[in-house]
Image (tube, rainbow, N blue to C red; front, side, top):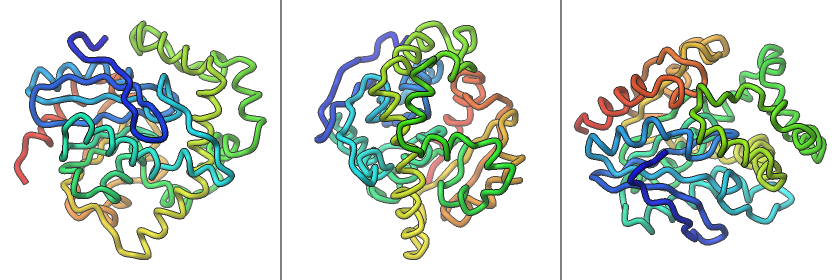
Amino acid sequence: MFEGFTDERINVGQVDLRVRYADNGPAVLLIHGHPRTGATWHRVAPRLVEQGFTVVCPDMRGYGKSGKAEILPDHSQQSKRAVAGDLAHLMKALGHTTFAAVGHDRGCYVALRLALDHPEMVSRLIVMDGVPISEALARCDAKFAHDWYHWFFFAQPDKPERAINADPDAWYDSARPESMGSENYTELREAIHDPGTVRAMLEDYRAGLGVDREHEEADRRADRVIDCPTLLLWSTLDDMEDLYGDPLTIWQTWASDLRGRAIVSGHHIAEENPGDLTASLLEFLGTSD
């Protein structure tokens, strides 16, 4: 994986981040979701580099081989604001004052927070397979509670750790080396077998139901929107359309310049359909403002 990329740890203040990057032009930050690491982009990142982009693939704080912050009573150490702050610091450390931010799953919430909290840095935003946390919770019904029960289970103290750590492979049983790639799969297994990483990943969800929701609701009250061009991508074989109909209608109130499309894939688009995903990213990143 990531042949020709630099792989190192960079201190961003509270934690060190494990990051892989390759320089070849305008910067693109790729932000993974749960329970993945930056390795989820291994089939996309080299293609972007080949097309003339600098690509940065970190493990978010708490995930993979990145540092774990001290847990706070309100879980704000794992808030999307804190994670976005890490990534803004990281990109500055790598010499990138502006960049495109791409976020998938939990990473899409971090990408959103980057665009809202650091608008001078994010030139383009791509969000994948998600709607803002506050919007999901506002629409929570019996179907959402049934299908996405883990949001609420993960927010409980201690018991989720005990359940996952008892048999991590059984809990994350959808992960397969043949679909992910063997090295990506090995990296995932290392992460989910580390109790410290498991706890930090759960803290992501605990922050989501509390401080992250509060931050988004404050954005709504202040009429804050994403000013940069924004692209929403979602997978046809996931449940975005079942839950929300056309997800563009939700994002329209958050972004002043929005476009989007579905991609034929399961949830992990970067692993399952990297060709169509890369083509969509290049089309969007290559257009002029």
